[in-house]
Amino acid sequence: MLKQILYAGIGLATVTKEKAEEVISELVKKGEMSQEEGKDALNTLMYRMQEESEKLKQKINEQVDNAIVSMNLVKKTELDEILQRITELEKRLDEIQSKKEV
Image (cartoon, rainbow, N blue to C red; front, side, top):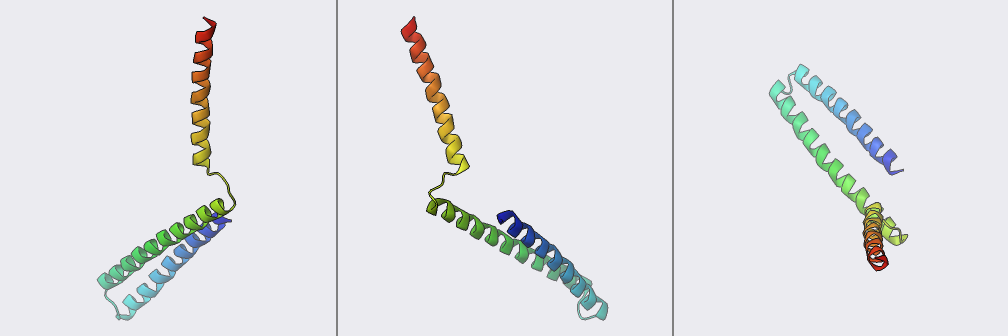
């Protein structure tokens, strides 16, 4: 579901960029905006869209983290850390057992 939301956001950004380019191009053709002003306007718009996209990603990550906490789930990174610690403990236990056998 989150991937679909992100893909939709990316698609919307693409459509928005294309539409903005069309509008700016039309304004330049009509002489209401110079070529340089059009480029600046598009760059500003793209920068703001990138900022908003980053904010959206951050909000989604926060919501996912909140959902994980509220459902009392373990994150993959936490599970990986635990598995690594178990592996290390198993190695140490094997070393201790092999010393006792000698």
